[in-house]
Image (cartoon, rainbow, N blue to C red; front, top):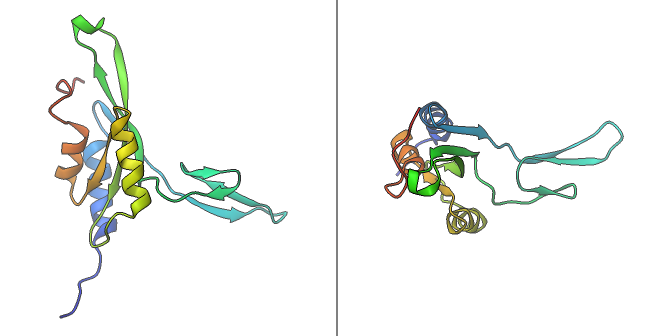
Length: 132
């Protein structure tokens, strides 16, 4: 049985369009390292530390802005969010740990195979409805 090519780039583009508007802002989180002109290794992206690339952070990092209800003083908050686009590949154990840590801290995180799955991550039932 032949395997189909991955659609992760297409899924990623659809997710980016769907969840980066209104109260949500997500940014591509490219993680890696390059050598500078003088040969020094420079790591970039969330998950780099001390010039080393740390695996586990997700494809998109950002927030969902919410208005706290009147009984919570009525201030606007940004809820940290992280989404990883997936097609055929499964999340790595380090990505699962990263997502679980974000969720435990009160943020939004998960793995999406479509724009609708990404929207479900960004708009869970426990948060008030999105406002412009």
